[in-house]
Length: 420
Image 1 (spheres, one colour):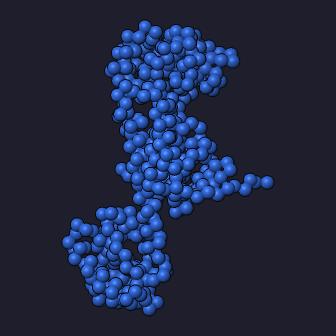
Image 2 (image 1 turned 90 degrees about the vertical axis):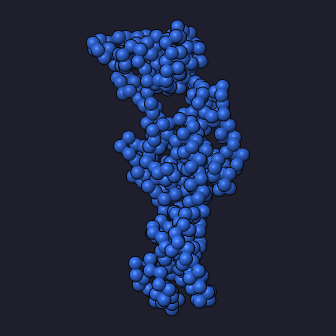
Image 3 (image 1 turned 135 degrees about the horizontal axis):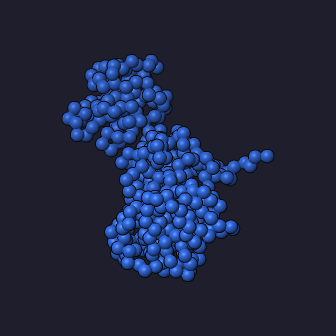
């Protein structure tokens, strides 16, 4: 017998608890939106795995990723954000009533921010699947460094994360061996990290190598490298292996609803808007050129702000513009356009002439660009006519007599045929 799920209602649901999601939630909570953040495992996401974050403004001496994310979480809770630790099973992000479903609960939301981040990239080398996580292959130096005391470890990769985390591992391990695909002396990390690594006596480099396969019984005991120049196989005995070769976006849950690029990232505009109204993306999950805590925070701030604006405009659209009590005249205008401004008194005259029989609303395209787009009035000045909560006509004809005639038709129960 299927479990009857609980239904809960929020203004904003944020999926993902990394720096982008936490920032979006902070903005939602501070705007007094009823906000929920759902995270499947660890609040703070991948940032918590970083031993030291040295380039986040405000911390000149650096700060641990876990400590920084705890501060983010505390701030979100200070603003009333609810937290739920649970994997999301399914979503329906279309329409104005969006649903995010976990094992026991269906959460309804007016707006959703996707901040699901990424997952570690795997090599796909033979034997890899037998040694993942607690059997010898790790992705988090902060998490597993203590278990490597006086042991030999290998690091795969040569970017900033690989070199910096490799240096951190030297505080525990007796030796850190780095497998680097490039020629001797060439890495993808920043110059300072490279210099520190090259000077560290506990670090050893295997240049021009890639992983061929993994060996071991119950646990990993040997990484077999391949020389990319000669093809020779080089067995290296190790106690643990760490991957720092990047991440893949965690977006499979949204495929078929949210547009994804060829690599699975979510394209957005500068407002963090996806292809779906009221759905935003932030952080590592987004199609962008840089994925750092600082950029995720910026994304989350914009996403949270835009979600709050979307919800406010949605309420105006549904309760004011699409009101069903009276026929409506919506004037879409630009405050910087002379023709738009000059017609405003005529709109008010028409409202007085019909003496409460019509509802007149104004949409300023500067402040209410999304409202204008929702109405389909992309140019200003424009007139939108409504009846019984539906758009029945649109026109750019500002002839006063013609507008009065169309409004009279609406009041008397006839559907007008406005000229475009």
